[in-house]
Image 1 (cartoon, rainbow, N blue to C red):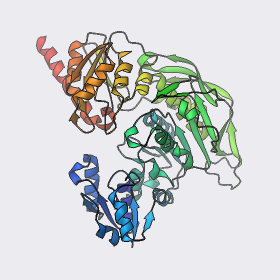
Image 2: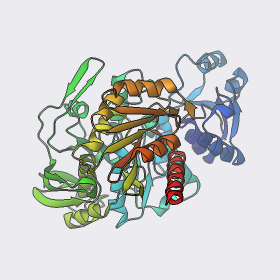
Image 3: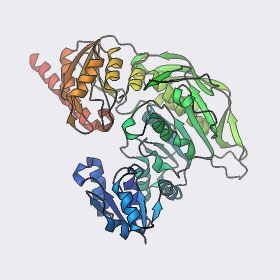
Image 4: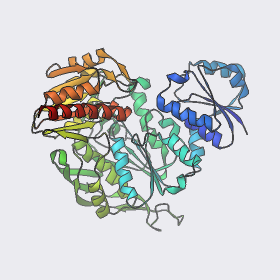
Length: 518
C-alpha cells in the first residue's frame, strides 16, 4: 500500500483519488477551497468518497501532507504558480502520478470498444445518437452531460461497482476541461464536431482551447478511426499532416469564424461522407440524401470481426453508395450530428438499412429543442444553445407561423461570454427577447450581463428580468396564439432541473390565471 496525495478535489482529482484508493492505496485529497465553496454535486460526491475511506482536507495545502506522501497526483488544472509546487520542492524528491498514468490504469480494466466525442457544439446530441444506434443491438455504457457524469469519474464508478462488464460498447462525451484525464484510454473511434470559441476563461487562449480538444486524435488506437467535421474552419485547417486514419463528413457549407481579429475559413477538401438535397421540415425534422464514398471501417476483412480475432488485420472498406435519410429531430445542426453518428455506425459494421431506421427513430434528448408545453396555441420549448455559433445553427432553416419570443438565461457561467455578440445574434431572429440576469450556474444575479445582451440586441424589443421564471411569465403574457417561446442558455445544461422547474412554475401560474378568467 502506498500513501498518495491527490491535489485538487475537482473533476480530475476526484476520479484519480477514487481509482487509486480502489487499487489499495491510502489516499489523501487536499483542496485549496473550503468545502462549502465547492459546487453542490462535488460536495455530494466527496461525502460518498469519505464514507468509502478517502480522506480530505480543505482550505489549503500543508507541507506535512506532502512529506507524508510516497507519490503525488496534481490535478492538471492546478496552476503552476500554486503554493503546492513550492511545498513539493521543499519536501524533496517525490514520485508523480500523471493524468495519462491514470488513463492507462483505467484502460487496463476496460476490454470493450470505446467511442469518444469531442468538440464545442453538438457533442452531447451526437454522443446520444451514437448510443441510440449501438444500443439497438448491444448493451451500451454511455456518459454525457445528460448522465450528469464526467467520463473518467463515470468509468471509475463503474469499475468500483463492478458494472463495466455489463456493456459491450462504451460511448462518451469528452469534456474540454478534463480531456487530459482521458490520456491513456484507447478509443476505437473518435468524433470531433466543432471547435468554435467558448469556455475560453479556462484556457490560455483560443489556440490552447483548440489543441486541448484536438487531443482526441492521440486517444485513437492503432486500428482506430477519427471522424471529423470538414465544414468547421478550425478542424478543416488542422487536417494537414493528421496521421490517424480519418473520415471527413460535410454538409457542403463552408463557414468563417472571426475571433479577436483573426479569421478562420473553411478550405475546399475531398469529403468522404456528405449530406445532399437537404430539405428541412420545420420542427418536424428533415430529409436528405446521404452520399458515402469509399471509407475504411474497423472490421477485419479476413475474420469479419470488429476486434480482429485472426491476428492478420486487413481493414474492410465500404462504399460508394447513397441512401435517403429521414430525421425526426429539427434543424440543420441535427443533420450535421446525424452525419457523424451514421458514419460512426458504418465504421462499427452496422448495415445501412439498420442505420437508416435507427437514426429515424431518434427523438432527441432533453434540453435540445425540448417541448415543455403548449398553452392556448403558444408552444414553449427549451434548448441548450449558449454561444453565437450554436444559436445561429439552431434557427437556420426554421420557419415560424407566428412571432418568435426568445427567453435567455444569463450567458455567463464560470466562463464569461461575449454577451453583446449573443444579443446581436438573437436580435436577427427574435421578435421579442427576454433576458434573465440570473447566472444559473453560480446562482447569482448580474444585471450588467443582461444589459450587455440588451445592448447587442438594440434592433429588437428586449425586456430584462431577474429569473427564468419571470422571463417565461413575461413571454406568456406577451404571446398570442401561434407564437413560439423558446428558452435557451447555459442554464439548460448546468442547471437543467432548476430551469425547467422555473419554466413549469410560470406556465402553471399562467394557466391558473387563464382558467380564473374563463
